[in-house]
Image (cartoon, rainbow, N blue to C red; front, top):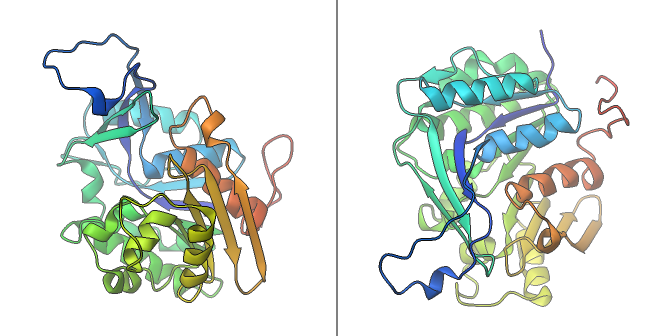
Length: 308
C-alpha cells in the first residue's frame, strides 16, 4: 500500500489567467473596452495547487478530487501524472471539468469566475471511503473550504466523512482546513462552520473572514495589526492552532499561533513582491505546516525526506 504524506480534498480546475491588467476594474465605465493580454491556460484549483507545491517540495501526495471526461480533464490528468501526484481510481465524471477565469487588475484586485456546474461537486463519501487506508497512514489531511461551501453537493458529505475517518484512525493525521471561499460566512453561520470543522487541528484563514464569523467589524474596515492580533486571541478559544492572514491583498501579513505549544509568529509573507501570485496562499500553508507547526518533515536538497 502506498503511504502518502499528504491527502488533499479540493478543487481541480483548468485556470484561464490574466496576470496584470493595465487598469483598475473599478474604472470600467465605458462599454466595448478591448485589452490585449496574455491568457495562460494552467491546471489549478485549491486542491491541485496545494498538491503541486507539496509534490515539488518532495512530499508524496494523493489528490482526492474529480475531473470531467473532456479535453481539460485529460490535460490535467497528464499534467498530474507527470508530477507524480496520485489521483483516485474513479477520477473522471460526466460533468465538465472545473474552469476558472482569473484576472488581477493594476491595483492587485483579483476577480475569479468559476463554472457553476462542474466535476468538483461530484466527489462523494464513497470515493473517500475507498481511500480510508490512505487517510489512516498519511501525515496531513488538507481540506479546502470549497468542499463544504455548498451543503447540497455530494462533496460536502465527502469532506465531513474524510475528516471523521481521519479522526478515528489509531494514529490520526493532522487535519488542516483552508477557509475558502473567503466569504464562506455568507453560506454558513459560525455555529454551522464550527460543527463542520469539529475534527480540524489547524485552521488557515484570512483575518477578515474570521472577524465576520465572530461578529466583529464590517467588510469596509481596514484591518491593522492590532485588529489581527485581537482576532487571533479570540479565535484561540475555538482553534488552538491556526494561520491568519491580512493586508491589502488578504495575505500580505500572517499570524501563526500554536496555543498549546505557546508559540506565536507574525511576519510579512512577501506576497506583494511575488511575480506569480496564483496559489500563493497554498505556498504559505505548506511553509507553515513544515516550518512552524512541524507536521511535515523537512525535505532534503534532493527534494525528498526520510520515510515515516
